[in-house]
Length: 222
Image 1: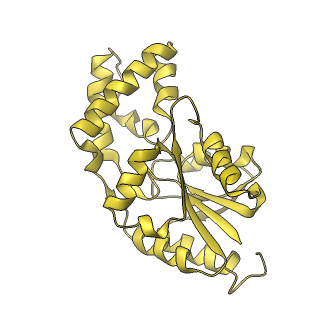
Image 2: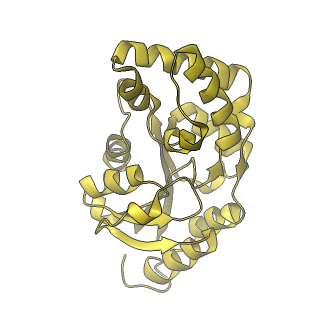
């Protein structure tokens, strides 16, 4: 069995419109001057870490996160997002492959990810969801660790599918391979980690790679 964990923002869904609008208002509220050209670097990683770096104060950072979430969820900006072309088929086909277990491991808040997976009608293709829970699991490493501990599996039996260095490094710290998705928010030219086993230009490439390398029907890697 191979356990394939997908990131959410920048991998499953393009969440830029809704997140960027609320980020802009949050930055303004807390007196932060962040160029719009840099907004993508704040989509995906834990917001508590991002705001801590910007505000130099952990308590103030959580205050900023609470304000962001009040607007993001309360004003339904969370729904200003869409599946990337080809992602629906990628999730469905990977889920249906023999020997493949599909999961989502995301630094998006757990209940938000669950809500959006249902909203996009793909929740049925996800066997396991591990999302961010503040003060419990916030880094990609801890989110992946929670998933593998919950399932009672080994990191070497898993692969992370994501678009940023946070996905790559989170997997790497656990000894897990990573498929790098080139359609999201990552600085791909700067990612050279040894655990990146494949660079996927489009979702169909992920499907083909998983089928050829991990599916029980076509591979001895079980």
